[in-house]
Length: 206
Ligand code: HEM
Image (cartoon, rainbow, N blue to C red; front, side, top):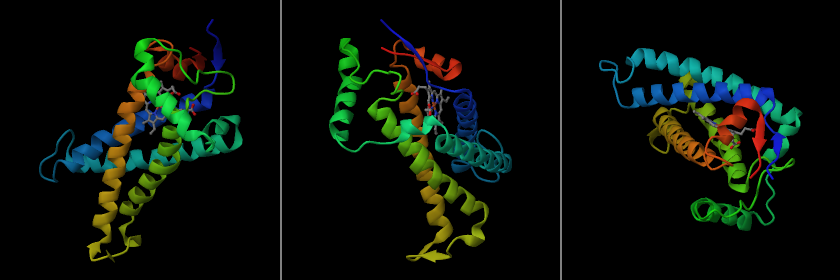
């Protein structure tokens, strides 16, 4: 019998929708700047893409700060605490389920319950994107808005060039995360059930 758990409080849902919209703006304008030049815009004119990208980046930093405080001061943060012991085995079991067991109709090895809203792979990918990739994106993004703080030269390369390259690679990692995130989100109790959870707050177990 399936049970429902209230796993996504209002603040998480509001943060998530802000985060998703701003990331989409950043991705579209980021690609637009990367594959165009000041005289020849791609999706939007180059100058407008820069302005939208900067404003979205600033707003994303603000919403990210709210997420950090939320995780620090509410019980949502416990879902982001990685347990190292046995992690390899748990990740393997979940990966095997995603590529094989799910399609054979097997039971999920780590079903949702009152204590657990993320399976081991979701947990690692959310910790990776929220506590590693996004902070580095913010640091490199803000540095490029205030380039006077960037080292002029590092190992014979221009500091701005290196910061920019690093920023672009991190941006691509977020795009890859997003594709996987959307695909894996369809592998809940039904293809739409996880999408319903992030809107209503209630998550169905398998
Ligand atoms: C169109 C964009 C997006 C959609 C439709 C979407 C969809 C979802 C869904 C269905 C869930 C609930 C299922 C689950 O917990 O796995 C979720 C949770 C989550 N998503 Fe997304 N997502 C989007 C963009 C993003 C982006 C850009 C990020 C980060 C860069 C992100 C990070 C997260 C995190 C960290 C959670 C768990 C939040 C928590 O409960 O603490 N999502 N998303």
